[in-house]
Length: 276
Image 1 (cartoon, rainbow, N blue to C red):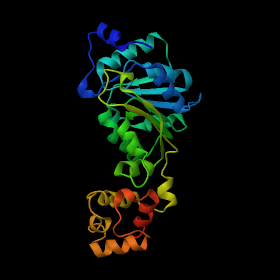
Image 2 (cartoon, rainbow, N blue to C red):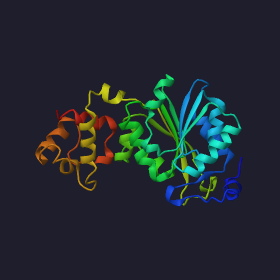
Image 3 (cartoon, helix red, strand yellow):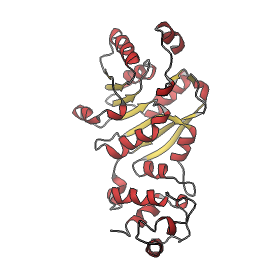
Image 4 (cartoon, one colour):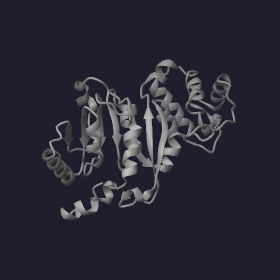
């Protein structure tokens, strides 16, 4: 594997801490990412933050097309020159913030796309919200390198649920594909990481449960707004008062003294349907 330290030093470049740049230096982790993505020859892949293109090249060997979005102009120019020289014609590069990227451009390619990326950790929550909840043209799956603690929160089950785990599990099935030690990157982050895979991404949960998305998320945000309080207290504003909240909980078969982290995704769906 290419050593980013040598390459970047040759171009007088240092990793930008404010942009959360950590370059993958582990061949094993690279193989685990590719394996987790379950790629096919006709796939279209969206990659965020390609950097020097270590992951980009491996993706390009296995799929029909790769769209890589790089915010750093210096890295974008360097990667563009290198991929052009290597005649990688199935890779398209865009110099912009991934949060501003519209996946609608991929719609012309036909089938849905997959996301495979080593994103800056500070972007994780906004990245997930954009591609799971906000975009109408969603990926079919995601494979992301994220902080270990974040991966554990996303894949949690009752009684350890959170607003983040519910928000992700409402749209797909998350699992931890592999643990990634911090020395797999340069510069090494302060925390260990994980390869997070989210498969079967869709709005099927809301359709099957006959839920209004806006109402559902207002409910769970209310529930987790005061975690130390019981749900009958934290949901009092959502259901107009504490008595109405208690009645909604009882109607849903839930204890009035239950706490938000104890409820499953289905519990929240049932509770959401009590308010029309």
